Image (cartoon, rainbow, N blue to C red):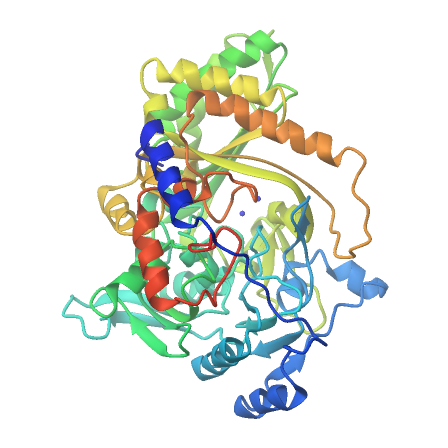
Length: 576
């Protein structure tokens, strides 16, 4: 399932009231459907086809009756290369994956601009799809025209890059087409150039969508957000114009693309991101400690909270720890810039705590900590030889031998979400009496459902330069002083077939997720949420996703897309 400055409750409520007043009387937008009078005529579609050199086609649905296709819908590379599919197949009571009517397989900004002008002229709903990983279904809509950017995947590494019109010092960077995935960006930057670019943890996540959502990855505690590394973007806006934006050219739009949400302000066609010095090592640490009673588990969680605050809340450590209803503390963390010995030493105090009460705990002596040369971290050949259980190679006919996904991410491919909730946890909970409140809320929440703390998705403990770069983005400022993003979620297997029935206990499980988050929020009642990983039904979504940044984002939206051509669920301006 590859921060913060709290808004006061009164301020949050006041903001919600302002938002409500602004959209009073808004009318839901409707779009023409195929076969209706308002739907473009075949001659119109033929005109678009000719304008973009034949890169328009009716969408061909995936043949889910074919056993070979069914076997592939859990392969994220296959899903990513099939425009009729999405990396999630839907959400309970919310959406189901539905093919668009037509797809533009864009190869240039000119192709994108033609599609945008066509959609605006004919009132057709427009969908933008890169990696297709949106949990909220933002890259999916029936009866729509899809701009599919998968073919725009060129990657160019720069030793020195200066944004257009800028007098800033040149910086090492990488320019990435909006259809590229993070695995290929890492392989070009880290494997090829010996540098690091901050991106997503899942190898098949699209670069553009992650950046526009803010962009947390496994090593964000050291390098900040992907949005914070954005130097320049090429974007097609609702008027069909292609713009180059950066800190001196149309700086408001540039800022909005840094965390303001994908598919909202235009179609990003290329991004240039700052790269960073590569550490000597990347590595991981796994450990599961089982407490043999509820009381022992409470004490374990309390001890871990203090252990994290003392030993792990720093730029070296990221990823997650999970508390489960079966009284297990499951550690699945990564580190950078440490030897395996140093990583193991960081866990010794917690292991010693458990060993001091052998009647209460088991598993604490099975810590696995491994380090690898950082330059080899996304090298499929190196991983297959040295860490084969960690990856799954893409075995499709004709697949690149360098393509793989992390085995742990495979569980997400094509899933049908029953519930997914997130909340940023403030670093004040790591101090003084806050530790006890956090440990108690974490324990109470874990009685309902497993509760994960994703430490890399909060910047408390990050270097000042990473925090300052992230501060100049549109993401909710709460993430700057959050030590983790709490995530509680559940899903069923793929349900691309609309006739797939719900599991008998689906709603009960969704209710348990909600109960767990309610219990956890007792220690952080005003916590915001990460727009890329959040609840489809987030009630306070404008303040939760963007805080006080929402007002500025709304003004930019009205300036660049006054007609609301780019509409996604819970995107800026969607309330209208």
